[in-house]
Image (cartoon, rainbow, N blue to C red; front, side, top):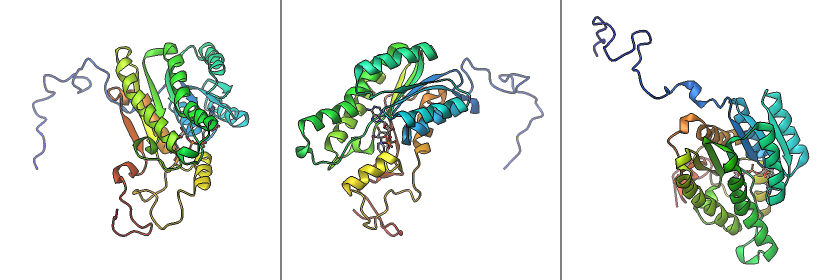
Length: 294
Ligand SMILES: NC(=O)c1ccc[n+]([C@@H]2O[C@H](COP(=O)([O-])OP(=O)(O)OC[C@H]3O[C@@H](n4cnc5c(N)ncnc54)[C@H](O)[C@@H]3O)[C@@H](O)[C@H]2O)c1
């Protein structure tokens, strides 16, 4: 290996004082991930992935409006956002209620002056084979995992500045079958598809629309579902290809990336935060190591 020859001085095309190539666009620097001055909204921010995401957005500099149907939980997240020195707007509401969403977003617009980032995180379900779900249960699952995402997004986009970002929290279940969670899975798949269409329809405004699809992130909601369904039994198989357990912050990190300028050319796609489950597509191995089997 030979050392570079600096004897000729700074090359003609580089700025003499900085040694950098001049360019018409902002440089990619560590600060590109910061969200100072951005205004974000996170639904379902009282606990789990939503809470971790709200706090991460605040730590990276954003003001963060947080809503949830559980008052004590979302109040706590609001205090935590404020404790990080950011503005917030706390809402106690069920995002399936369009009137409540209207009232809350009016408050967000007044308190934060608009939005740059919208994270559709609220969602969930219950265990039941598809054909056993009652008409009421069906309606609730569709509203919880699809209709409210469409409603919240439709109402937030007019409040958003050009150059903003929408991030929809979907699921590995939107990419495969979901026995016992069939309607939830179908609705997450619908949000995945909606994400792609909105990415095209909002490109002229430079609003990027992406999904983050988690799997195996320990949260209160996930623990409850797993206990109800017994879908994760102690069979001796590793839960994910990745050897360590996931954390809500892993999902929050993906949202921060997509919300920031680092993701400026990323739209209409899905970031899988799942320890390799999507890649495995059925391949598994014993928890204590060993070969991959189908
Ligand atoms: N944890 C995982 O491994 C995992 C995997 C796949 C997808 N997800 C998705 O991630 C998102 C967050 O899940 P989590 O595991 O953090 O769940 P969680 O139940 O621990 O937290 C969800 C939060 O959203 C709130 N919420 C739910 N529905 C609401 C509604 N209609 N109105 C207002 N608030 C509502 C809840 O009160 C709760 O505070 C969900 O969309 C879920 O489908 C999670």
